[in-house]
Image (cartoon, rainbow, N blue to C red; front, side, top):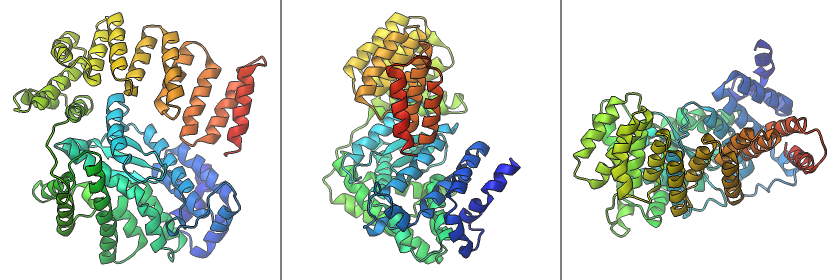
Length: 516
């Protein structure tokens, strides 16, 4: 470990602003040391230093070096002078790889689908210039959310549970999408073009770690006066509000929800006794900003109030699956049965069934889910839970048939394919699982989870080289080309005879080596 840290120290000193500026120019040419720093951070689990390494790699490449690479776009826009879209994507992919490895990353298929569906619904009305944002859920009671370059937006479970209706959750998503569409990080860098490189690296690192430091930490890293920091951040917040409200209205959500939710957080910070929510620390709020948001939202037609069953099912699922104290959600769900809202009552019964299933109380879980299943014969959340409980009760054929029926009724719900494929695997039907997943991969070639499941299927079929190929496509989507090539070379050693499989792997290696 001492040897690795010694090798990493020069670049680490640069990105943490510990080297004098004249010495930086020499280190700008030391890209092998940057690669060593990446490896060091990954081996030692130094998350923040890893992100700083990603940032250093972005800022260390000079404009002249970029111009020599014909594959990179011209940096003609002022907002792209310091950080182009390729570099943004690289930073985002590095962040996302770390997020996926975090024990707090919420890997529940249904919750991931729900958060992504909200984001997709809003982002289709935004100008992301071909970028397809990825939305994630992070297990933390803090009320927070942040956007990372490359289109990666993370919501905390605490924020989801703080929203009283779906439009409030959508308001935060729309606001974060607006930060991406307006490229606020490159614009902030453009204004700070006179700053020295170490300050720039520290600033970028603050933004890249998102919720840990966020916008407030980034503006502090620049070293401007306190009043200028606030005015600078608030300008972007007002801009994100304006864009976000328009996105809310266009995507069918209540445009007034943004000011409603932020005002609620502001009241909680004053009267709640728990301090300022992290979201307000990284997204400075003022009464003038709230008033401007209300005025802007009021210019849109009145929104007809409607309750989203999926939103309440999602919040119930978070409480049931992710609460550290199982008695708390049980009491909450019992209270939900007495609610005047029919939607809340349904969600309470659903959450109770989830908890009973998780605790192995299968008979009680079946008793709870059966009335809901009869009431909502095609709802994917309710039917998939019923199938899971049936499977746990040993009713395998019945569970698989239920999965098949609800998937036929909801072909766009990709998570149902995940669940059905895993049911096939657990019932020792890997061929059926492979047939299903291959079809889905052809239609959804950028879905990470499909490749993970496909790898499990190939392992079950003792097709180890094909399993490695699935791992490779997963790594490629995350931008980890070096590791992908390493896996492919390992796969080659498992193939003893010449043939199509060997040729396809060799061709893929050559293709990916050009990207490294």
